[in-house]
Length: 382
Figure 1 (tube, rainbow, N blue to C red):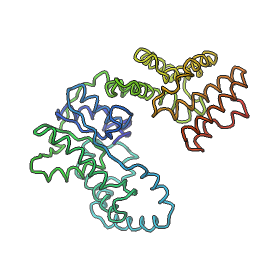
Figure 2 (figure 1 turned 90 degrees about the vertical axis):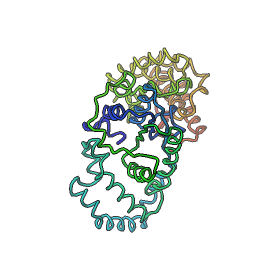
Figure 3 (figure 1 turned 90 degrees about the horizontal axis):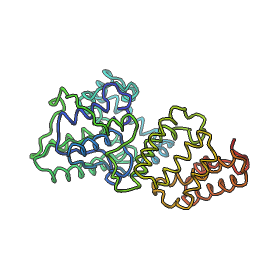
Figure 4 (figure 1 turned 180 degrees about the vertical axis):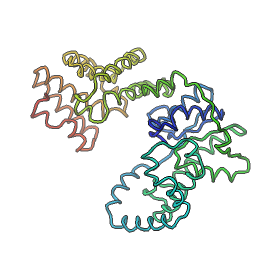
């Protein structure tokens, strides 16, 4: 259930580990795209499962696939008259479907289930939930076909199944667990149950779950968002992504870069040990110096923040490609802030101009770019 594991008391990240430890598979398939695997942050429970696999000598395979741009197309289509007509058709079909109506009478709407977020692993892996999801997608396919409105349901699931098949072929006779969001489970159950040489294990058969002790790396990830043991640290850019991922909720959360005053002092305190660990592992990192300067700024040590930022001014090309949109642009904006707060207005204006130029070089969305540099060239930051 992806991000909902964070707050669901009956289906926690501990439960994911318990499921893996109880079933004890030889192979773990996780809902992560191959291009992201061990390189970029993705679904937390899938990263936890990967860490568990690596630490327990399991083979781990990434099996996610999706078409880019689907959600943007959805947003555009929802403004059309055709959408209203088709949604009315879906509404009528839903009302006429006995499986869906029986589910809704017992549990409420699907939106209500997600809002309450208190159903356990037995519910999401159970027949009622999976039959409901299957019927909802069956109706969506009958109205929209395999399209962006259902995130290309058939194409996506069939591509994911191909990746699962590759793992099965490479591990004949082995115990395999496939971890996916609950909206995929029914599709894979149906497809794999038809295979004569594959035995699909019913989730209920592994209950009750054993209580498995969580490793230090997994605990670190759950508690501090620091995913040690997941990333391929032979790649220095993966080290940057790992540590910055741990800092984001602390000092770069919603609205924090725009209005630093909302960042709690406790968060700054928690960020410091992460910076120290980063320093020990990859002291030459430009991203590390960027984050150190941000913490110095938050602690009102503007002069030191300027020194820290200037120390890497000739090495910004080393910033990993995937992080440039943020680190490179905010590097100049933050430098401008520090100059403004130390009464160096001319230098501040030059920094803001460089921020604007960098946004253009990186081809950032114009509205997003303006939200970074705003009108600081005309009005100093205070």
